[in-house]
Image 1 (cartoon, helix red, strand yellow):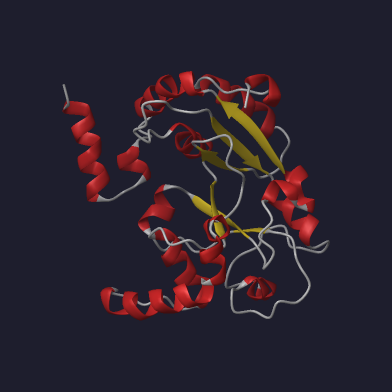
Image 2: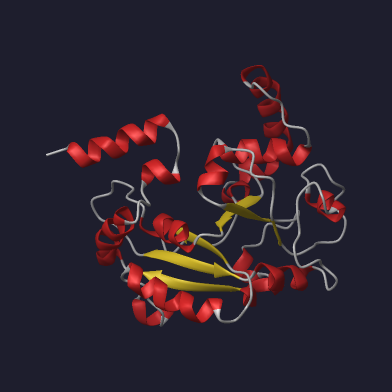
Amino acid sequence: MTEEAHHEVITSVSDLLDRLSGVRSSGETWWYRGQSNALWNLSPGIARDRGFLEGEIDMMKQFRQDAAPRLRERPRSNWEWIFLAQHYGMPTRLLDWSENPLIGLYFAVEDDGKADPVDGAFFELEPARLNRAAFADAPRVVMFDDDEFLNGYLPTAPKGPRQGPIAAIASRSFERIIAQVGTFTVNHHDHTPLEDTPGKDSVRRVLVPAPAKPRIRAELADMNVNASTVYPDLAHLADHLKGIYRR
């Protein structure tokens, strides 16, 4: 995928800040997401493997069975169980977004250790517009466990007519969601990539060229946006410190 195909490119944090000046002036709320490979579409983890799709409900049952004795406090709702599973890397119908554009950019340039890095992508989402595409009378702010119509998006809900993806906020009950200022889009039973749904006009995609990634990572690190702050656990802290002191 070439830069010319995208027209818009981010090669530095300064480029991002220039974009934000225009976005903020619109008065709308925007969310952000980065993907280290520009060829990946906006599909939730559950849609990336046929076995995941077919076993979605069974996976969640088994996760709940074996996670329960390892938890100090059990989730209080079906959605909280799904957030917990997503938090620990299990494929779900959720797609992570952030209210912080620097976090979104971090994920677009995150070092995956490959010798031959590829172009990344930075996404800007207008959540209210996405929701209007799914429901004409959708509230401006949609929240899990508060707006009951979202229960139709649970894996165990009756299939019913297809609905478009919804952008929703949730109580920030996990350290990672807090650190990443996390929000979500959630797919209905139809797992069409977001950019191929009626809400596609709510999302913009910007190329982050592979050669620019090291520079952007360094600039973000100067702003204290790094693995240890984005992933607030001891393993990532140790990896971050190793990177600083490695010679």
